[in-house]
Amino acid sequence: MKQENFLPEDYRPAEDEPFMNERQLEWFRRELLRQKNDLLSESKSTIAGLQDGTRNIPDVADRASEETDRALELRIRDRQRKLVSKIDAALRRIDEGEFGYCQDTGEQISLKRLVARPTTTLSLEAQERHERREKVHRDD
Image (cartoon, rainbow, N blue to C red):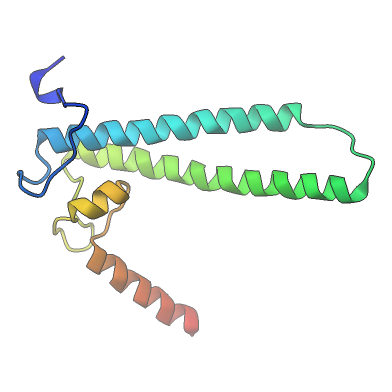
């Protein structure tokens, strides 16, 4: 293992170290990969459950309830599929040296925001501007 990839188990990115240094990038890479693996394993269990769960339920209300549960599960999995794509994009940004910088302004995204949402591509201010523009256009 390379020395710069070594991270103590209790390591967390901190404001008092250089922004997006090797340790921070490695921490984010590991965090993103962990999230992706969790999502993929949940997805596999959902697929198995949906395949195994096909059964004939005579009661109409029970059948409707089960179909509603399945539809909700599929919507959740679709959102997670989209999150996996965002995780892959974030991993590419790490590889390309663009991770942690706002796509709109080029400014640093705060570490607190990145730790809370490592797939983010916008600083808090840029995200707020984006949401205000969305709201204005939605109200038209």
